[in-house]
Image (cartoon, rainbow, N blue to C red):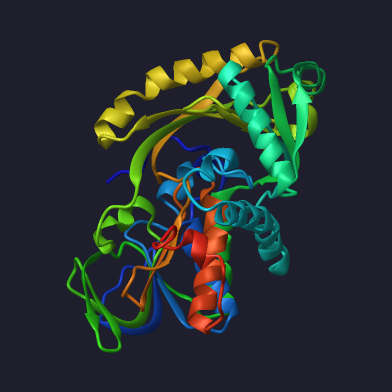
Length: 403
């Protein structure tokens, strides 16, 4: 399936990762990671750093799936507000999820500091504004519960919001602990780094057709008929992980994005803040380091790639109208547009760890708007599991949460 269409900015901004190495023989491996996007790259990083021998496979070129279409906002906020999440799962678990995402932003930064590489990581504030009266009530409830649990948050009334950010809305929540990144640049460099430094094996254009459990792990069979025997397998294939799941645990969503031509610095708002709203589906906005403005949203329930792609022109027009309404003074002119398919869950949380009873198959499924922060958590949690280290985050991100 095509995971995106149009021209994602990251593919134009970065040099194309031109690595072609399909599997052409039977092999054996300790750990196999299926999926070569930002999730698979972070998992490979954590496991390689822990001294584990890893093989990464992808049915496409590296980072040519959903990661390419990501707008790569890094926030501790989750698509499901904390005040709503506590109605779905235990409050302590909900707070643990939010605090894990908060820590994840710093951990992502430290990953790239440790290898002396900057994937255009930038610390920026985040503004979550009330789209309407209902949204105003929501952010007030959300402010109270975040303050209760000592999560970083400030409340801006409509006057403060207008003065600081130029946004006309009924108020907002603000924090100064968010960030943004180039996920394509990050993933491709991580994979390159560990191929050179830690003997990471990478096979592209290699699709697993079938798999079977063995007494010592798993045997994977590719569509070309080659076998991979491994002790442990990690599924980091996003919504395409479906063939490895006993049942569907996610909903598929189509999302749309546009990026402007570079604008004058004077049009960029306070500290390049990430901006998003309470309305569903929500509008989300960020900048890049070239003064381009990225606008995303207009999510739709995914039906098929053809229907998704047919809507692209219409969605571009809607996103353009919305950004011009929010910032009428900005001369926004769309330079590129794209759409992609992502997954979401009922509680807004990812699924990480083992399926009950499957001790050697691990899932790193960063479903939701916080995919990259979830991916970092997944990489750490799976590393700990393989190393025999107890990780309390299993309680909130595992398949048996709430039981």
